[in-house]
Length: 576
Image (tube, rainbow, N blue to C red; front, side, top):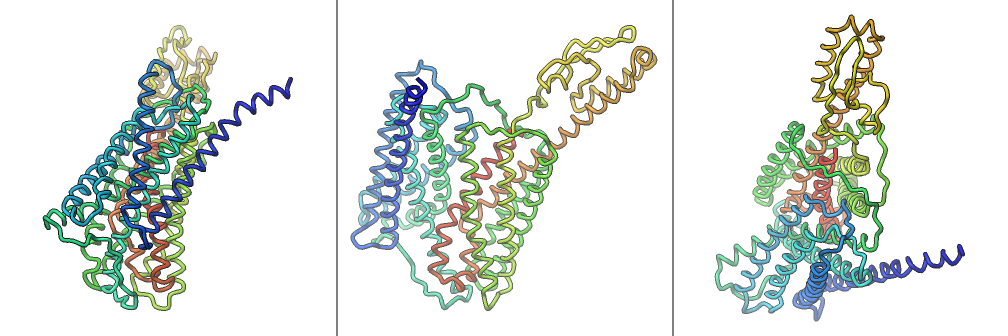
């Protein structure tokens, strides 16, 4: 009988596991084919043009559109059914973030449509069809994620696995296409600046895919062509966020969930003033540094060196502050005795894997810079600032990853500041009558028989008041029972609560500060402030082409790391 039961259990789970493996292999092959096509276009392979790449991407988007429409229609017909939801997936702040990036992506698509109209005489029709299809794909996908990111699909599971994984890798290919296009633009600008910095031994050959005809409206063409590249960072973030949300949806298909719901923790500005002030100061100064950097770099050798020095000094200061804040937060965690939540959670597991995986991109660049500084024969003065900068990048991400991963795995406190416990104390003939459980009793989850402990609420005000009242009746209390032990336990409870509140407030300020710092450090590489390109030292040591390949592969992960860290820290702030 046991053997038969075992076969029944295995038979029930094997088809679903098989479907998961088959769908994942389908998605990987889909992605590899598109990646090879993208690479062939980038290196000007014979017989492969941009229209071939765009045709492939358009086909993938149309297939995803059909699947999303089918899923939405089926959901409408089954609206009355009660469905399981993953409360950890598709957080509201994540949906708001992807909506913001999607809106800017729609502006990018409108610019591309305008660009195609101006160059319609020499552009392929696919370059006009692509932004229209992409706009429709963006609108429907954002609506789909808002309504169904939390779904745990239990019907048509095999078909849905293929539909969701198709969507995941379609977004990854669109992300890859955006990264490549934006990187080629950055590379062309970088090549033009190298001569200014004195690296004349590097051959400048622009990799230009510009149309071979004149624009009908010169002013509009200039606006469209320049605006497109400033909007690409938002498009890139949109697609990577969409792919991660869809991946969680794919992992949740057929999953059996525990029915205890996650406690909603809204974001509050109260108690994080210090962290917000320091963070906003860093954000403002970073924007100023980026503006000055982009204006000064490439103008002359002296101005370029000053811009690089300014960038490195500012980044070193910010990274040092972030390391200090992260170490303080980890020390506070070491002093606390709170258990970790090890329950199965695909969204949380993906967050941790993305943090470590994408951090490897900037770690690769940092180790490359350190090795170049050690091996270079000549060192311009500004390159020495690159050494502490690269070391701090490695240390800061290491510490920050530890802080975020531990924070998202820590169980929430059972009692928070919003819980108000009313305790009515009646003193009559030397006895105390307690009508409600004390703070400690509620915190431990049961009502104890001993009523000698008083709660410490409203930041100590009630404790102080009750101690004053008790001291006024000290004669009665001393006659009734030992008041010294009563006051000692009361004072100890108040002290413990006060210390816990202070630790919690410090952690919230640290999370808010790191959140704004990560947004600040996302801005420079996303908008073209990339000293890994401009200092030139690594290109002399490793060679121009090898180092540029390394930067182009690693930089997108580094950019995504900062945005993903900011999102995770926002969640940490809400949870703390």
